[in-house]
Length: 165
Length: 411
Image 1 (cartoon, rainbow over the protein chains, first blue to last red):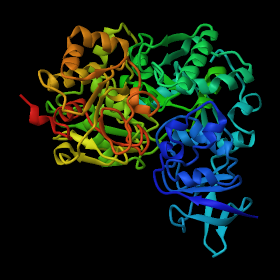
Image 2 (cartoon, rainbow over the protein chains, first blue to last red):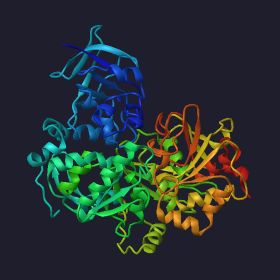
Image 3 (cartoon, rainbow over the protein chains, first blue to last red):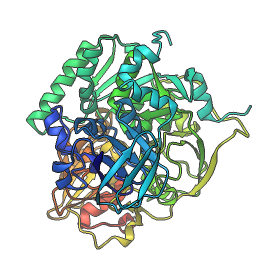
Image 4 (cartoon, one colour):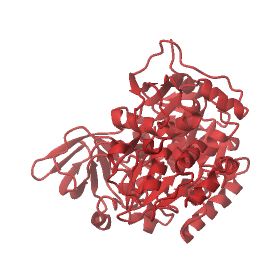
């Protein structure tokens, strides 16, 4: 199945992913902020089921969880990057949003929109021209949380709550 | 086996290992209005009790006072929510959450601290492991009593050299960012030893540890010494210090020389650093002294040392926001606030101000701000350009109207 991939560059901060003026408890306001700081046109048009491809240090900056939640709000299929900033990575895992680390070179220029096929089983993304990238899944612990649908859904299944710790 | 300070604190707080991750208990958990408001609904839905209410410190600092009607509603929802949480430590409107955390007499050294804000890392300056987390992580910890963590690699970071009168913790943070960047030691626990001849003040150390977030550090712990001991004693903390063992293992080691001249981070990121003296061509529209990174008494005293008896440049806004009620009262008592007002500065109530880009004091398109805050990513503090520096550089720039090396004002 064809879908679109949106390619961004290095050190894309939480302020570019979701500018502070879209911080809101209202999902409809939040949704409009997706990548607005990077490309306001994309913010309007990114289709559900799309894939985001990024360079190193994706999500550096704030801990504002709306910057991760917005990918779920907009039904993004996968967010992959050469590396993730620590808190952003945790937020994505905790919300159960699919992520992957890119282990190959990114053949597409930053700022481009590419038609791709995402092969979940073999963890690759390929374009019609034959260019492709390879992916590695997150750690086994993170995968467990994502497969439960996020951290809060995991409490009863994965963690024994001990109030005397 | 000889252990680092980081390993010792982690070991003391590890409840159990779960595959490739540790489950860690915490001594303190920090909430504030902006990110705390995000967990109200999921908390109610979850319907579980708090594991350790007495370990929760709830501040209100981001929307104080609120700049829009929506922010006022978010703030009120959060305040009402924290009132429902029986047994927690509520401290609204007393300052920026990170500053009231380190002022709290229950916060000592050797502790594990988490908070719903990236600059929670600042409490590492007292010899703690402290880190920022997102709202879901925090909600999970509120009800389980622990957090999850992959055991971090540990960097021993040694500060060396002689701190001159115009160099502060902020300049050292910028020097580290300039030297190491933000991805070289991403996710490492930084264990920092102050081996400078002059020793950094506690206020400078808080500023430095805050910027650990920008360095990509999981933790930024400054090893306990006589400066830490004096600070802790003054607030009545009697916890004995934990130190690293001699010959402890570290995954990496770096030595940073104290910079010889004041530095400035230019857009688009905190690791793009230039000497202040080379940036005279940058006019400024706003100078901001405040935030968890640069709104303490040392910063306000430095501001006054530069501006006393002078006037802020025409058309420049000097905005000063003390980091806490205590800092504000101390600054009032020292006569600093009246000097700032006489020079034409604007003083606001303890809060985050424009730093997060969501409250009063943000800058518009085509405007430049020089600030003692921590981030200058595009869009962080409004649509203009932000330059990061110490209070000395910021105040000197407020007087001239362009980025200025404070040595031009030295007596």
